[in-house]
Length: 215
Image (tube, rainbow, N blue to C red; front, side, top):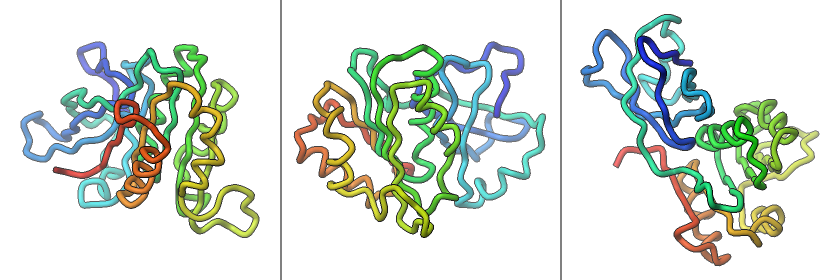
């Protein structure tokens, strides 16, 4: 969680990302891009959700509260069109962070449009923001579908991977609207979902993908 020092905060559009630098200088060579996970309606408090998966991210928990951080941004066009009739988010793992930002922003701004989140994880313990997402279903016109590849024996939801059958079961109603589709997660999941959405007739202008990788 970042607080502005000497300014009013970073204004951004939900779904965008920023480059993070830690230390005494903003000109350090080690910059790291992260999707902004918090609501765009509250730029005075900015949150990043970081999964430990490398040298920098694995040590981020050791950063002391009160440390100086620099942000460069915002960047990216993985954002919801105000004119769209709603949105579908197909996310895997920590790829849910831009969707979280868009849903929190929708809640804070009283958005009445329908949303569907299809969220894939390994097991119940891997679901980021589980309780918060459940709470958002009471504040928004939001349907959350969890898909677990290694569920516990008492799991009642979708099992396996996000397949065309899962998408068909849960997107049929909202797909009748002029909604936008957002896909973010592991590359194999993204490849399958993008291919299936295109096969279902989703035009490219309504399909947005964000891959957590350097090009």
